Amino acid sequence: MSVTVKDLKESAIQELASKIIGTVILPSDSRYDEARKVYNAMIDKRPGMIIKCLDISDVIHAVNFGRENKLTVAVRGGGHNGGGLGLVDDGMVIDLSGIKYVRVDPETKTVRAGGGNLWGEVDHATHAFGLAVPAGIISTTGVGGLTLGGGIGYLARKYGLTIDNLLEADMVLADGSFVTVSADKNPDLFWAIRGGGGNFGIITSFKFQAHPVNTVYAGPTLWPIEKVGEIMEWYDGFIHDAPEELNGFIATLVIPGPPFPENLHNKKFCGIVWCYSGELDKAHKIFEPILAKNPIFAMVGPMPYPAVQKLFDGLLPHGLQWYWRADFFDDLGPELSARHKEYGSKIPTPLSQMHLYPLSGAASRVSKDETPWAYRDAKYAGVIVGVDPDPANANKITQWTKDYWEALHPYSSGGAYLNFIMNEGQERIKASYRHNYDRLAKLKKKYDPNNFFRVNQNILPVESKSAVPVESN
Ligand SMILES: Cc1cc2nc3c(=O)[nH]c(=O)nc-3n(C[C@H](O)[C@H](O)[C@H](O)COP(=O)(O)OP(=O)(O)OC[C@H]3O[C@@H](n4cnc5c(N)ncnc54)[C@H](O)[C@@H]3O)c2cc1C
Image (cartoon, rainbow, N blue to C red; front, side, top):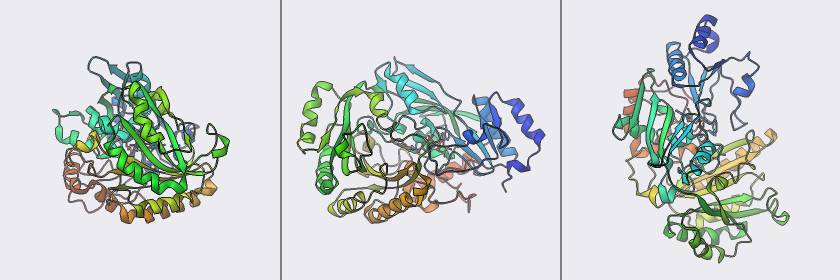
């Protein structure tokens, strides 16, 4: 039975505050409303207390306090989760945004980052050494949630998912104990966190393998939405056989405005955003077959890797309304592309879009049970996102996303990349972990038998009939 923060004695909260070097923020605090904001403005949760941790000791105290007082606890890294899993109503938020540092070791090409770092901060540090860690495509996303869920981005075909580049992590477990996990230390937990989300503990430090990536050849190509069938068919045949240094996600989208030319504004397109991380003198040759498809607009060229990671940051600032749905796909056949044409033509607001990320090369060479990330054999991770600044359009973008998803889902592989969904319940989580769910549930029982870490894509400890539910949306 969970207790709310309101039920606690003031002296207990004061005692916690005296033990930590970070800050305890209560609803009465003038900083509260700012502290409870997350990236998705559709999420409006009111935690009972927010603990802004500054070091591992703060995290240990916060975990012990939450457990001893039977609070429902959410853990916040970068705050980008679509369903707002970094927040919880009435309970306690362990906010890691103050645990930030990036240390690059150029000799071993490894990188350490704090549990609260954002990817742009990691990219900034590694770029000075001509290195990069495979991550997502937006620089404001948190290292914590993205890594623990998998991590799909431009370097996935060449170097794998983010989890495939995780070497070690420092963790605080539900009982307040500290462990380091790696292939040699606590290998069962190391397996679990490479896709198992925040279910197993709080990561205060990540160590990654970085790779030589410096200036890349990147940017978007666009075709009118009417050509989506032709372009998808060509792309499906092209991308998986292309050199692994080439990546590009295919999308249905609207061009919302500058920096694109005015004649494209507010029109619907099939677009591909490319990133080639191989030798630059080969880039022209690599892009020849792409440009031969006569895009109506192409803006590809050399740019620093951190710049491609920030290409869309300006268009997608904090504070927009977001609604997500996702699925994996094994192909992009004509039935699917017909539906992309239909729903891509009905995109309701300029920032709403659909993306398909190719899964091949290094990301697909990892076996289906080597990490919990079970869809290594799928060809695409798809996501539909309804986005708009105006809360009055929340229903419109949600409905379009659901309708688009309903139309595609019968052709999908069954599960979804869990970092691309809202809170959709146990069946969806099980379908996404597939054959790996039972092993995860056993490890959950071993390391978190009371399901203390449950505000996430929740894995129930084996034998547990139910978890305290996180509402579906
Ligand atoms: C604009 C945008 C672009 C995105 N692009 C991509 C992309 O290109 N590729 C991709 O793979 N994903 C992408 N995502 C999805 C992203 O991976 C997820 O939203 C992820 O949950 C964000 O992590 P976070 O730390 O920012 O989120 P939070 O909301 O802080 O946390 C999400 C979950 O992770 C847990 N968590 C976070 N940090 C820790 C930690 N240190 N220890 C333990 N648990 C932790 C939280 O408890 C919560 O359950 C994108 C999301 C957005 C909003």
